Image (cartoon, rainbow, N blue to C red; front, side):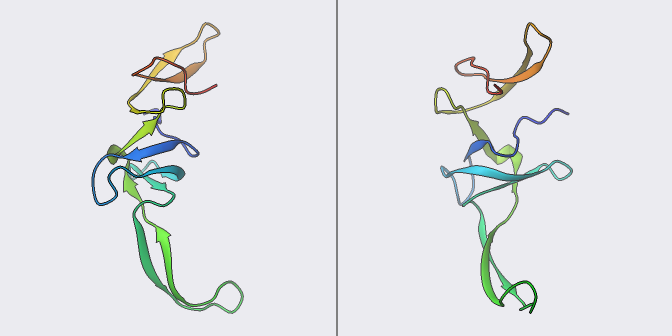
Length: 106
């Protein structure tokens, strides 16, 4: 299945404790249908110190969220929208905004 949300996209959370928050997609996990969004679904984890890499303590990091709970924010109209696919004249497949019809992949 083609990916409707990619790394670097701006998305808005539709449901859950972080409803309404907007953030950038850091990573996409297609096998689990999840995305990691910067500043959304932040959890605290106890981290053991590692002398070569990091200091120990309680760290905050983003946890994955289901892709069905987020909507892509259109760069042109600025609203959360569904994503469609279409082919351009040169044969390339691109994503487009279902609200305003503008092409997202430029």
